[in-house]
Image (tube, helix red, strand yellow):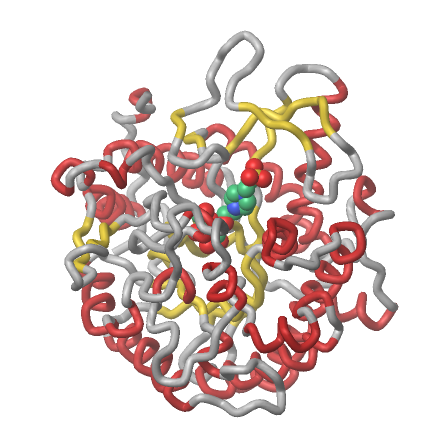
Amino acid sequence: MAQTQSAEWQPPAGLLPKTFLHGYATASYQVEGAHDKDGRGPSVWDDMCRVPGQIADGSSGDDACNSYYMTDVDVPLLKSLGVNAYRFSISWSRLIPQGGKDDPINPAGIAYYNKLIDALLAHGITPFVTLFHWDLPSGLEKRYRGWTSRNVLDDFQNYVRLCFKEFGDRVKNWITLNEPICVVMFSSLGLKPDWDHEKDFYPIAHHLILAHAQTVDIYRREFKPEQKGIIGITLNCDWCEPIDDSPAAKQAAQRRMDQSLGWVSVFTHLGHYPKSIEDKAPKFTEDEWKLIKGSSEFFGLNSYSTLYTNGESDPDDHLGGNTRAVRKKDGVHIGNEGHLEWLCDVPWGFGKLLAYINEKYMLPNDIPLIVTEQGFAVKNEHLKPLPELLKDTERIDYYRGYLKALTEAISKGMRCDGYMAWSFIDNFEWKEGYIPAFGAVHVDRKNGEWTRTPKDSTKWLKSFWDRVVEA
Ligand code: GBH
């Protein structure tokens, strides 16, 4: 079901300044491969992939997209797609194989990211770097159960200092954590065999928030005066549309929004949580609140979908717990379904989310939005022959609708400084393995060469940015 009603839409020419960052995003474990090469230590995801039954297709990120070895292919390819920015993440265990503050540093890891950063800059592409995209060094999980322990804070501080010191002369855009709520969620999905939901949820959340705030503090005090970059956090949020007019459905939708975005209020002007999660959220000391308040210099948003939120929900579920649906009771479908059950193409939902975020979080705090991920996995794309899957009209429809919503919000005055499509290439989609394809570029994982072939959506996106961003 294509969004044909917007197919005639002409994007507004020259709406955005040249400084607007647009490009694609990836994350270390999902693309790098070379999991045991040149001194890299294992991460919790390497471990997870070795537990039978954890990954849908029994795969792992061992080789992923072989990106570790393909900088010379990928960076010129990115350039040819017309981007001026690329978001990637650093693998903590590639830099510090065992992860801890007294553990040795791996020079080959530093050399790899130097090469990538230098290649990007040589091609006029701005690196946008995530410090933590879920791949905690296994060593720290084994030592003290990772994020459940306060010990992780010292080790994280040591790791981020190393990143700022080694790369901060050239990297001016930093993301501390990607989707902290998902780190908590994945822990509850079986990563930790000894996971205790009640006991472990809040310590993990607590330490993630502090890790973010301390990182920003370190950057501001020790590096920013000279390096002059910006730093913020990325949160995920999909709009929650109440399934009907019942107060229960409205309340459940609001609670879920608070549970995903409420995290941001502590980084901004409010210095407290939304009411609906207040009594459950981690407690901080006065000094900690001082670090937390105002500790994000932009609102990094990952947003993909919208679902109907059902009133029949459990208010005590920490993860927003409510049943969600793609159809209203009268059978009306919310939008074109992607490959995952949570993924639907709902441009109006994204429009509502932007208005909500702007009013509630960005305006009062005077920070810009940066869309750090947005994308679509076309249903069963992995089963199609190459020539057919390259004609990814459903992905083009998706981007057209969502970018229309974004440009409309910007035209109405919302501040937005960047947009990264997820993803540059088809990659390891965590527990779903390689089945869902989010890439704008196809990767042949069977021919032994990880051949990259751009799908049609890359052309659509290029012409969109060519038109919308000032020459
Ligand atoms: C992002 O997360 C990740 O940052 C990225 O690494 C990943 O590849 C990409 O999305 C595509 O999935 O099962 O109903 O509770 C996206 C955020 C949060 C979206 C959890 C799906 C599950 C909803 N995800 N959410 S549900």
